[in-house]
Length: 157
Image 1: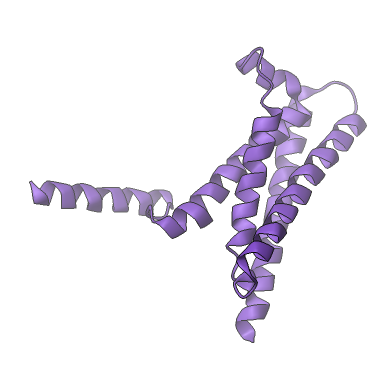
Image 2 (image 1 turned 90 degrees about the vertical axis):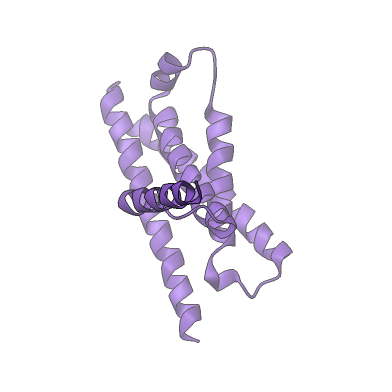
């Protein structure tokens, strides 16, 4: 019976490796899975802002904007909090920095999408959705590159 548990664990680890997921540890939950959930929420938020009718067709009578925004902010804040370049800063101050960064990123994105939506020609929902997803992906990539570069600067010292 013990071998079945070990083989199941090995099978799960192999599956996680193939998919690219990290093992479930406390560190990974806080600094990988919660931020990953935030990125998924961020993508859904971009679609919700750029094409509000799409989400309301899937889930009628429920406005998920605030839930998606809070999930995005939480994921971003956990990501920022866990960055190596902030490890020598007091936890409370690091927490404030993380919430500030998460709020600015999330709310700034919503504002950018709202402005972008108003500038798009016509009422083409597909174009708006693609513009939201593409700009969101670009912002996530740019932001993660920024934090990676900050971490490298600290690692050099």
